[in-house]
Length: 235
Length: 194
Image 1 (cartoon, rainbow over the protein chains, first blue to last red):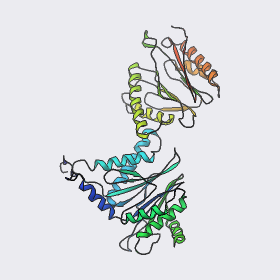
Image 2 (image 1 turned 120 degrees about the vertical axis):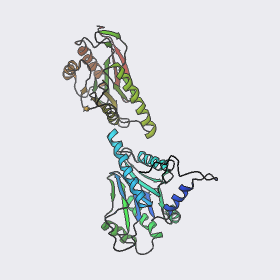
Image 3 (image 1 turned 90 degrees about the horizontal axis):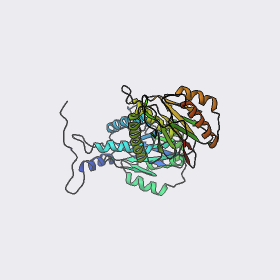
Image 4 (image 1 turned 90 degrees about the vertical axis):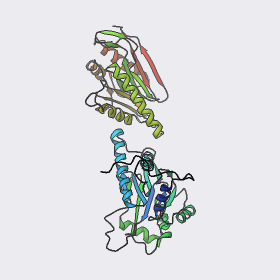
């Protein structure tokens, strides 16, 4: 094992910016698009999962994953960095449960994950994560849905609806027009597919997008057959 | 000891602080307020009573600041259990008793724990201390479900006093808290000072 660096690799530029974080955000913007929409009775996460070759086994690896039974996550950016954060998030959630015998509230989990991401912008010898996360959760106590975004800098934002990755500016503009406070979960799924479609090249099928929903029954990924039904109602 | 009533809970303790046979003080409070409707009683070694209550207060305040909400009694019980089990092989010599109302639903809650944090939630009463066997006897005979706050006060006072009167190292004054949705009443009992 090499000696740990004692100095941070992320340092300020004369203009007051942390350039490494800017570059990390550029890595995120080059990643596959993902969308999150909060409805009255739940949250939907959707992402593009285009594979470069038909030889890929689409259904074995998932971009949308569980952290706890009430909280799920999706990313835009570098897959391997996401895996590390996913494991950390799961561990943080279980540590909370071990102490308090209560499921971690979404806001608390997001705060803890964001702290981890921030540590990697200040610790010695490490680089920031090249992913932005969308965390969707249902709070059992307050009985309401939450949607949060975590950036490589460690900043986190609560959203009603947002888009990340390639074409996120157009995505957000589209959502600004389409979003309404009174959306039901079904309509939200519909809207998220439409948002993804804006930046999609080629034919959208149930194998090259992934959708996850979070409501009071918890978080779950939609099966390809369910996605197919939604796609049919869109086109 | 703590008892459940109708939309209320009661927690009571004696006030003796002694070193085996010698009584050092008769106003040693062992019941600590952890929230507007959450109280914990800590009988046992006096130094650990103070340390545990201080450490618990610290953890509780951090929780409330971080999560921006009042803690639920059940979650608080898990927090106490965790704190005690951290010292599994060199424990704090306290056996806590928790009484409170849920911050949102005002459901009554009582629980007790052993010195390494094994929690026990009951629907009637919990007891802890040197005269716990006498207390179990008194509670078992006097308690009945759905007592109004006034009746609960009578019941818990009689149970506590008669139990510690049968124990040489307990007694010398008693304090009783009745916790209801809109108020908490603290009463000092006139007891045999022996």
